[in-house]
Image (cartoon, rainbow, N blue to C red; front, top):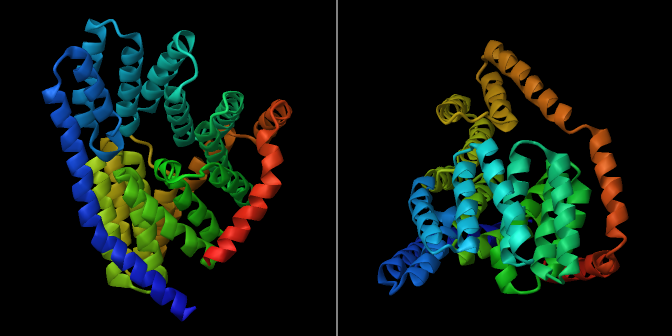
Amino acid sequence: MPEAAFYLRVFLITVLQTFACIAFAQQGRINLLKTNIIKAVNDQERLNALLALCDEFESYSPDTLKKYASAALELAHSQKNKKAILMADYYNAAIFYQENKLDSALKISKNAFTEYRENFNYDPAYLKFYRQEANILLRTQNYDTALSKNFELLKLAETNKDTLGMAVATIGLGNVSNKLQKKEESLHWYYLALQLMNNDIFKRKLCFIYNNIAIVHYKLHNEDSMFLFIKKGLQYSLESGNLTDYANSLFLYGGMLAEFKKTAEAEAAFKQGVEERKKIGDIYYLTMDMAQFALFYLNTNQPQKGVALCLDGLDLAKKNNFPAGYDLYESLSRNYSAAGDYKNAEAIQHKMIEIKDSIYSKNSAEQLAEMQTKYDVQKKETTILQQQFDLTKKNYFINTIIGL
């Protein structure tokens, strides 16, 4: 184990050193896309350049996206370009999503997608809309509806023989199971998705799956598997140039360093992760990251720092009209207890109970079981994935063993 720890440490330190180059390359790509807008020789070329820049929204702030999405929408209307108008609406929904105005995001996204489906056949934009709606539903703890949407996409992607779409849907199903703490079930879906992601383009585009799998293995105390997948998550998120995916990987990186008792390096990684997330402007993930960072302070006997960080996170959530999540309150309660402030810890625990009751009232076991049964019947109509699963599982574990 010490030898494995050494090699993982070397790898992670190399990744941190590499990030400056990757960040520079990503910024260069954003600047190139901006230059393409300026150099466009006609309105159609300019509109295409605007939409291409908007598609990188996970690597910059909502204010930046708002500027270019508004320009794209205006130009799309002037050209009477229906598809571009609806895609501009998709990016406007993304703005509200990043600002955590989830009701507005969901309304715009659903309306735009309904109109898109009425006018255009299945294409890559379908995946964008499905992923967007599923992500909103996960944030609002509407897991039964998210389950429904992912099964719907799975069936549609199978019908259209779209491998990427099938992978997106199965990852979505894994995410719902993960949120509901169904660890083995989530791994079932994630491994199935990995078999479908059979080229580096897919692996970069969907690189977040490796982080999700690493988290499940962490919960299951499977250290070797956790190391394997965090390594892949760091690799493909760096290659993708997606700052959101990289920030997610960076926090897992910090967690791994903490596991190895590399306290100073872990704190630096967490701080860098917070700063990267602030650049993106996504309050939901920022507060989640702060909750994780606070647990690091708890585990390194610095509970006062953990309390201060959690309170900053709650203040940030309040200023952005964002309902702070369970994880942030849990981290705060545990840090209060470690600091000997049992009165405040108890008060926060009552708040945690309220949040948990609210989640389960919206997602009863009966509702989820009914939804699962309904779509199990539909899945039998298209058997491609089920026929592949046994072979997928066997091949993947063989490859994993070889990799280890």
